Image 1 (cartoon, each protein chain N blue to C red):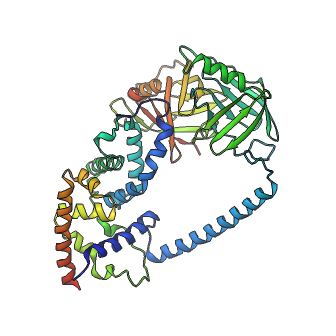
Image 2: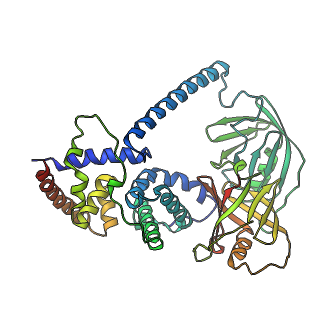
Image 3: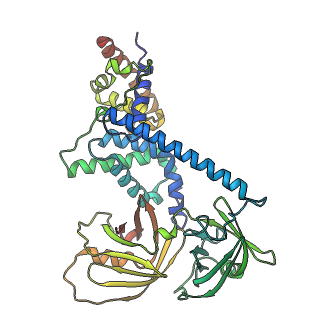
Length: 167
Length: 291
């Protein structure tokens, strides 16, 4: 059932959207890191607020609905500013850690992910980096959860191969 | 064999920490930021501890309300809404309270002594509603009956309880958006979306918005709009009183959208310091605070 448009709409929106802000920002950084991901989040929230009364849980989770809006806003920005392009994870600097278990950097994981086929890369980024669950990833990718699992399994095999070459 | 799942989780965790902390600079700068954040956090913890200690010492057994005789941060600047009918509202100032039952209301004199406050005579313009008012007559009558005169008050979380001497009480819920953040400030138009939800290009020079003493004074780029306003938890009702009728150059759709949105009951919200006023099919106006 869609949200009832009425006096409680705005007051409830903050509480409704807050749990998803972290995920939304991660996704925005992934999409729009060279520009201003916070601006993209803001733009997404504006749009979501205006359209909130049309949201229905029957059509998917709130998180995927917000991410779909963010993807749409990012796409519109790219149309308006052709210089912008999808940036990958390298655009976000990684803190230097002295943690001895953090050996992933030595294997250049990001470079290996960049070499994956598009669907595999998308699944890995959404599942591991944006931290979505398999069902949400499936909704965004427009496929069944089982397909996401098999895509990620293929991706992990490919990554093992790529990282094995590096080590 | 490399455990790819673990590699990805470790790398993703590192990346997420960098993103979530909003760090965008070099690693050296990030370390500096982290140190500063730790320092600031320490100061806050210390301040919070001192504050908690002070409150513990000064509070008595009845802990529902602050002991200050002033209407401080606990009440002032927020819109308190009657949750049963969602039409009755009270906005506390320093010495005034803007009380509305959803239909009639106005600015009233406020006097606070300890846990007792007195909502006195009307000192501002009285407002009445044009057309049908929200909520029920019984709800408005009850609100009017309780929210007046000498009352005991207590705040627990987001709830304000006002109790008459005869024991009848009403509990109001605090709106998360402080009304004071809208009222009394000049806002400048930064974005206009038309009814098809497309942005109408600016500049919107001179389009301002100011609510003061229950009245709106706004510009649609050429003419000045004045209206009586009544603010509830999520809506502003504009009851247009006058608009100048200057001969304006063709200002396109911007003026039309402003005129349409600033009329009737509209929803509003504030994100990141921007004021959004939604006119649904009439369009959307986005304002920022004037510096």
